[in-house]
Image 1: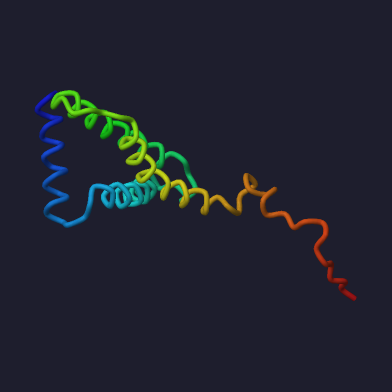
Image 2: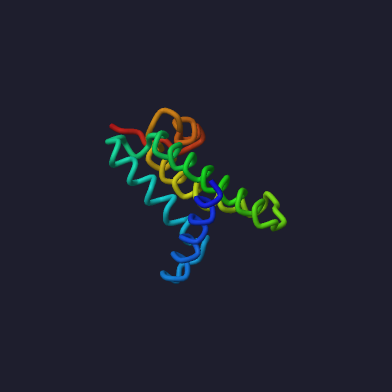
Length: 123
């Protein structure tokens, strides 16, 4: 288990150093790309929750491995960086899912026109 944790961390460090993208950039990109990929792979509509839940599960596994690495190396750990990583990974896919569901009945009350609007009479 420890070897897996350290290999995963070494891969992430290599990926960041090789591509020039930061740790946070990868969280943003992979959150969106994995959500879209699982949506396509499972042949679900873009507004489905299942692909985002799969990405959330993978992100939680990643954060558990990060926590284990902090514990192994004796680094001080706080929940702040973990929450930032989860938010960066999940908020863009959440925005995509909610935008795709905008025309559904779930958001009907937000789309209704207020009663005070000017009515146009058709003759």
